[in-house]
Image 1 (tube, one colour):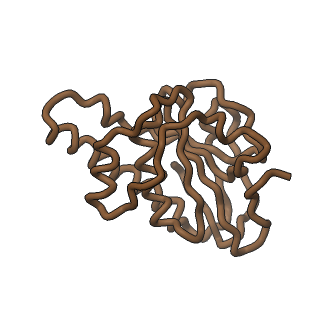
Image 2 (cartoon, helix red, strand yellow):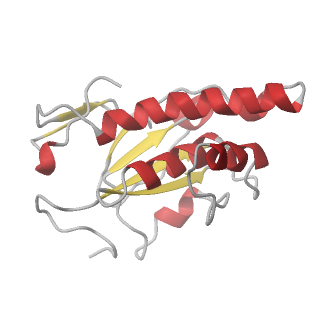
Length: 183
């Protein structure tokens, strides 16, 4: 059995992994948003296929400006979440187009996954104000997407297209009336 797997009951906590190639900006923002907004219901994580090793300072600045925690983030490989001691993911979301097209690892537990294409704020050239504006825009998009998870409709099913070029995943009713509509 994998460590940190939540029991199958109505009050379980779901593990969510946000993936991006460099894991410096979008996946960090998504992790931070769900870490706070989904506390008690979700454990949020981020990782990348080719981590750059540092978190973009604008990601932390924007999280801080919206009163989200800025501690404990790091740019790490998705291999961190494939070992026997890793938390087993329930959901995996890619937040950049390049990560969505990559061959993903085999994830323990076969989590449902989807792609949320968010433009890379770290790619914006210009003044610090223009760069920060791009990070704020990415934050807002990701916050809205995270609301789909946190405040999901009560239909009781999850239907999302797999982010790693696999067939659509359709799950039976989930506890806590968790449902995610069209992403």
